[in-house]
Amino acid sequence: MANTNEILKTYFGYDTFRGPQQQIIEHVLADKHALVIMPTGMGKSLCFQIPALAIDEDSSKSAEKPPITLVLSPLIALMKDQVDSLQKRGIKATFINSSLGKQERLSRYKAIAEGRYALLYVTPERFRKQEFLDVLAHRDVRLLAVDEAHCISEWGHDFRPDYTRLAELRAIMGNPTTIALTATATPEVQVDIVKQLGLQPDDVTMFHEGIDRPNLDLRVIDVWDSDEKLDSIHAVVEEWITPESTGSGIVYFTLIRTLEEFSENLRKEGVSHVCYHGDLDRRTRKAIQDDFMKGRNRIVLATNAFGMGVDKEDIRFVIHADVPGSMESYYQEIGRAGRDGEPSECVLLYDQRDLNTQMEFLRWSNPDADFYHRVYGHLVNDAEQIQAFGIDWLRERLCDRQRHDRRVETTLAMFQRYGVIEDEVDLSSVKVLGPMPEKLADEELRAAKLLRDQKKLYALVQYVQATDDRKKFIHEYFGLQVPE
Image 1 (tube, helix red, strand yellow):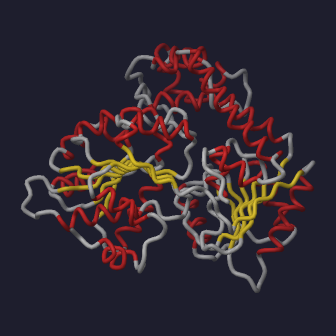
Image 2: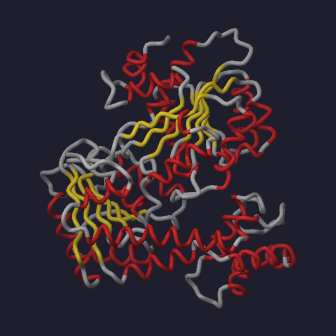
Image 3: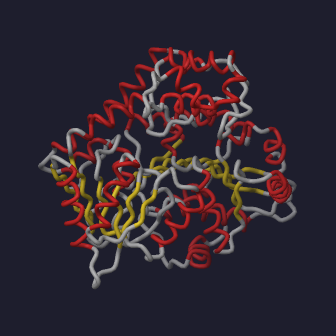
């Protein structure tokens, strides 16, 4: 058996493991399944990357089917960042996703089939492609790692339909040893993750690191208008960002237009910063993130598009200028602060009016069954008009000219996830590939989903009101024992 301490030192430069990492790694290498719940920034990825390298080192080079570790990851940008980092360390890792051109994809398929990679990152949607299944048949999937495992669960905060096929996909791969990892999972989600994997509770050992971060100071500040928000942001920035200090900070906003308004006002006050949001092109977002990671810009104003894959140790503060949409989102975002163990501050600026924005978001992200049927009907009957005039044509017929209503975008995204239509940018060649999904047509299921999301938002209001011990509230929300 390969020496995991040597692998840790050789490839990652660390002398010792952190917390339960070594225990988890040994558990997985003994062919036992695991569910790992570990705070953001505490080294979850090593719990499958080191086993992958150990499996590769121990394998016989003459094996008919060389072993491989397959990593299911929900985000294309995240998997690219992780693979780039691994390759820089000399690790044989690659990814396959829709960002690749045909020739590059075929080249990687050939290399995978020939056994030239130890780690392969894909989204679960990749299993719809027969060419991928044909390539995978040449390899022995020894370990399956499911990253961001809350995506498996219909109860989780980032549900993806293809994750409900995990039991089927595991069977295709020969039911490999499986490790599922996430930073946030309520007891309800934990049970559902195991169920969706096609495993019994007794088959899976849970390693729960808890969510206690003693170095984080959690604060809520009641504000009544934008001026008070701006003053509060400025006060936190002045405390932490000085010529004598190091470190950086993130200020999260819900809406891009609000972010841009605050950006303009902060610039007038001489606060240097950059802005990051989903309307920027990928190259610009990458440049902004690189500048922030390397300390060239110490403050970033961002929507929740910023954060996945951001592993920066010296983030001294995270400010939520608006109320987040759920406890899960809030906890993931504050988890980016203080990863070096040094004192850091997490400030939520609470304006009750912000709840109206989040309620609108919930409505946009939860179209009812009738809306799904109407969009589906247009796709079937009006394909030529949609191909010619795009999403605006649909929105005019379905949203009563409400400029900010995003239900059409949500519906199309869900149809893409369920394979009803292909994933494309402008609908210029859109066509219906399958029937209306039953889960989207069931009004009871739609209403239950909306109610669950509303309860998550209400939990955030309860958190704001928990003036005695907010860390205790977070522990209880995620079903954890409160630290002594």
